Image (cartoon, rainbow, N blue to C red; front, side, top):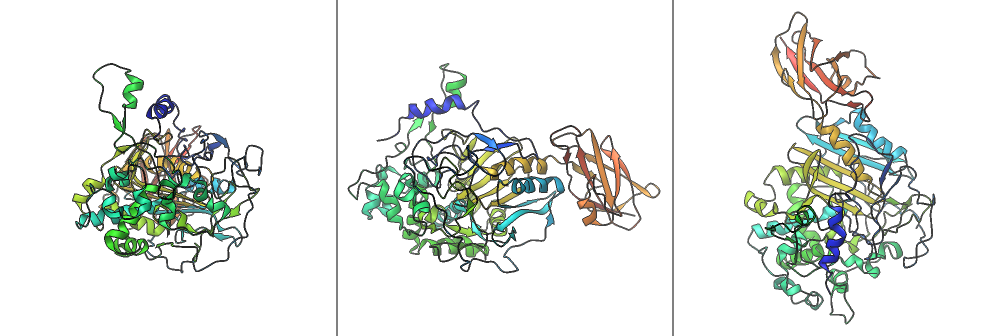
Length: 600
């Protein structure tokens, strides 16, 4: 039985204009943040991240906001699980490290500068408030170079600090790895996106017993418009991270809850393949005025699609899933600290924590952080079992979006084919590409990439193509939506700084006026009432300078307009930056990037 599309429309159409999660002001961690969704695991956590990695298909609670702080539930601490959820919720002992560390020289690490103070405050506020145990973010852009920010701890027991070279579970960013593998197999002519799934998996009675499977193609799996529901909706699988964290699953066992092959009633599909619904914007804005635009295809985020794709990758390549993904992505790009976790024999150096359980309980079930690092990832398999580091993910992002190292331009035309995700409550406004590719639209830019959630972890890999900026984030809790809060606080600061320096950055032979030089710039996205210009010959000191901390050798000049005069010695490189100052604004300072020129 399929879901009634009009019931779905009845839920979503009124929300298109009014129910989207509020966006925090630039650079500010709000006093409230999105609460964890309910048991459904398919409800509105935040569309920038993976919202469907655990849980069952019971009613999902709408996105709410509670006070930032210890992460306590509505009653201020742990509560008994509601009826129908695993009980009691007992936190297991912390795991012993099992070969999951990374050496002193992580793969793909780049020379980097620290976050400006205003950026760093975003991460520091998240950890000191108790929202997350630790966080690490890498930002790379032409204006800023490579910047790294860390806060909090990777291991609360040892107080090991967060670092960008630490391995962690990336959750549904794993879908990127698998999709890039499938698309390369298509690129080699070994499969076609229009091929029916049964061409490769029809001999498996479990797969043959999935409703509508004869009508579903490889492309529909990649783009998540097959209608196959999320296998994690079955309690015996969805609850397993909480009740049997070391339990191993095979792909057939994961898919069996969708199939009639075992004689049991399967989870019903979300919709029939190629089902459509009326354009929601037309319905809400124009009612019935003709002519009506073309309908939208149904779309729903379901991990089941990427389990089936993993099975297809094995059939086409003749290799186990971990080996084919390694051959086509991990080894090809030299991601030396990345691997496909087949079981729980290795644990990441970055420990994962939760107060809300290893499944999405609707209430807090632990009084303090529970270490859930030691969990068998086979329940997520090709939909979420990859372990990587932020440095390796940056390398992946740059390779996918800025080179042809994996996909050629012809294949990218197919990859950049987007379906609207508006039908999925909480995902407005976003498109989903032909394989592991989200395209969210935010007021500060449009990105491509993917988010990830796995018990104890949240992650983001996004490339803001209009700004040539990569954004990589890892936090070691999956409680609530702090990864999205951090993104919405940091990226406006990154993209709103002053631009267009004069003299141009790196210029040589700049003509002075006496012992000084005139510098100019263009206001950024957010205007300031005045500008603070820092200049000196020590790049590190100038970059670290703030109005409250001006290092020796750095000169601070205040300007009311985008022009200033700075002291400059002939033949000696001068470093300078301009911070936008907005007194009385919730975001009082927007830091500027570091520039330089050499006067003659």
